[in-house]
Length: 179
Image (tube, rainbow, N blue to C red):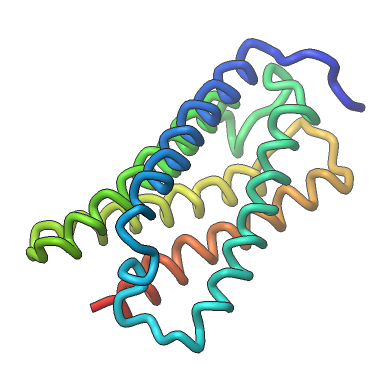
């Protein structure tokens, strides 16, 4: 059943997503000013359109799982696995959004002045996003006490694709091809 109001825990999750989303989009708005092509590094032009499609599918997945968490469940009546609380999602989303906001600035710094420390920082933020995305999928799969309808299945499917994109395509493939 759709909810008409956010529970306090959902208000916090919404605030984390709003602030984190602004930080990520802001970093992209500023970072793309230096030229999007440079951000691809050595990624072959032939696979860039696949990345663009994957980014779109990932964004749709993000909307599916955040919609589910904000509008389709009651935080006080769910648990994650054997007793985890809804508040675990706060940390998962911070783990996705904060490093995501750092990727573009770090990559632009690296392009301007390559160093091993910057490269390791880039790899670390990509790994953190990937790991947090996997944690999100795991938490959704282990969610107990929630309605198991179509919106839940879309949330899980969206989180799994989002995790694939961030953990595999970004953290592994992009990183391997960039340099």
